[in-house]
Length: 357
Image (cartoon, rainbow, N blue to C red; front, side):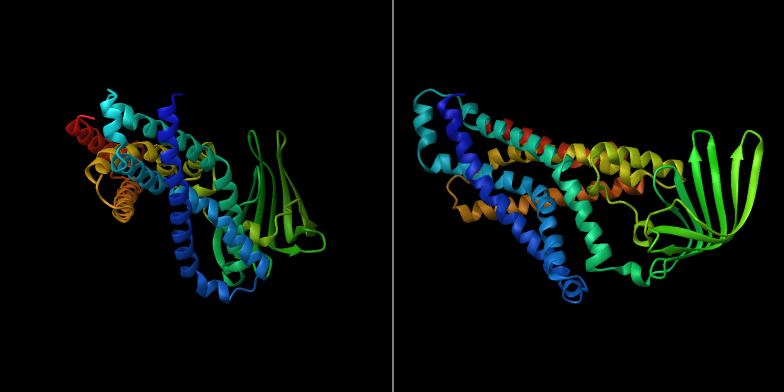
């Protein structure tokens, strides 16, 4: 790595760190104020609320990385020109592309870091934050009544219930099925089931236990039977998983599972493609920012900040439009996720060619 390359990467990383922190804090505060009405009325203790708020930081940090990348590109390139270094390096015979290639390489590194964070820190933090929100901070399940639901109760186990009341820990007309490689292995079919806090199990009442084997179906009536189902009522709440709580491979697997159970997997298919496309937004938006920075080379940093903010919001708007079209079936999942990168990437190539960089 040459001295000039290290110098340009340093020019990029400083405003990138500043922009990442600033944009993340601004959007985090906006989201917090939006939920403040629920937070101040929450029955959760202060440490739980603080933990929930802190766990939201990784999510918003990953989301604003493209904005920070664009700001860093604009500041690094315009500052390089304003300081007179551009003219000095041209006088030394350096090609024009040598000015912006280090910045582009730096954005490629940011792309790799963004993808790594999206696959490790963000899903874990997001999943924990959503759990705290739904169970402790804003526990909607306490007054919700679910009718005619099929509940996932862990690997190979499903529960069907006519009426599920999480607050009371009760399921009416409850059926617990255990699946094996060839289908249903056993079944508890009861009039109702109650959650026993002391046993940590669901107890089925007034029903029949069925075993399915090569010899046929064996039925055993019972008045009360302690099942192997140890998931407490809040864990059985039928809440669709958020793709942001999962890694790329987990989203793909979940999309296939939703399809097998008769649901529409398009939301998760689009999300899987978006998890690949979104980190590359840093590379695309950096390439777009280079010719814009040279056009704004005499402008102040305030102008650069406003330009970064406006262009970033436009980029995010196109991402959301593509995602909506993909979920609605207008576009295939890959086109919905990559359309914003394709559009802005094409614009970047045209502007770079026009400026003959």
